[in-house]
Length: 273
Length: 273
Image 1 (cartoon, each protein chain N blue to C red):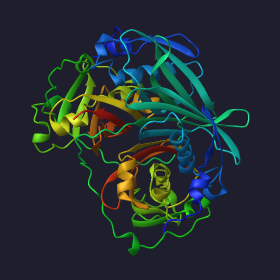
Image 2: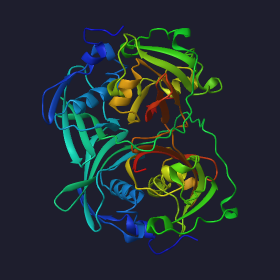
Image 3: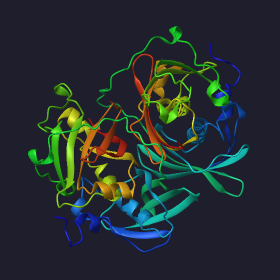
Image 4: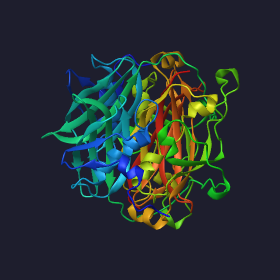
């Protein structure tokens, strides 16, 4: 059931050429409130690194700082290998537009994942199977419609109410899949790690002005592990610890259906409420 | 009981002069296995930003990528304000030594913390009072002796055993204070967020080769909040979700004794086991 024509996600995150300087273009298919979906931007940055001729190993950590809204159209990626040793690489990526204004600033670590002692203390959250849950209704933001969200817990109710009602739990557990199935890889994990709805929306059961400021994702599976999983979806959890003075946090987990923890992610986001 | 002469921590994290280029020197008082304690390095970077004439607002997020061991002696900090708007600033900092080799690569976000809806869904973990717990014994690493660690749960037992015994829980709950009391500020929070022992040591009850690769800390209290807390210690928790192919994660919380969540932190670290 995988598509043979290029997947929209692959088109949206495409980059071309370059040694230190890469180019890309925003996609209307992954649009959010005032710019491209941050997960798509993060995946685009990761794709440039994955395709870089000097890249060695698998992505281990990616931090993306969203400095300003990315405008519709073309952008440059200035990609720099800051430091490399036998088993790891440190990268810096700046996304610029127009007169060189920085829209996004990222750092990444790649590593050769050598065999070691393996232990997963985190417990697989489990959930009602994907097929038995209904898809979350389509939204106005195009990016959200590229995903099939199926909530097992904490489906948001944007009925309004805000501070007038008691805050709801910001916890969610849901299946996330590309709506057009696409085999899970590091790029889709990166994007999905930003595909949770703002925790403040859940807590206040209303949409408020919101924007991710900094996002960090750690990869706990390498390409071989992901190949072996051979899946098109993750079971994901997200929660928040605090909302204070216009900023709130989020932390999340992305699991394979078989119970392997593939990635952990955290972010801090601006909100107005 | 606060010291009047400069605190060792303030000496260890001191930086001088510079607009875009700052200088510092490693401290033997905060030394780890093969270089300075990563928390001290992170706090030194944060101090350069805090003292920068263009800095506005409070630290919101700091990510530090440890690219190579920092050698004993002097280092340069190349500090760059990448993007600023009315309420936030994005910074990049590179720590270099010798011929310009990058040892540490960091990004930071500062923000004016405007009043907003405030809500803390995370639950204060609570613990036996600091005074009723014994200090963790002194260690060979000098940095660890600058702190007074008092474990309420998950005190490590480095008796050895490794994979031969069942893994222990990597969870810890402990008080962390400067051994010479020092009023808590953003700098000490930054340092303390890397002051947990490696989770792999807890899980395997033995010391193994270990190094933090990337550390991210979010601040949930601004200077006014910290001033109001007026404390010299935090109640801290740390846990890990997975150890796999030579890398393991850690996530932690730093709480004021009064029950305010001051900072959250996560890191990914190399281990050999």
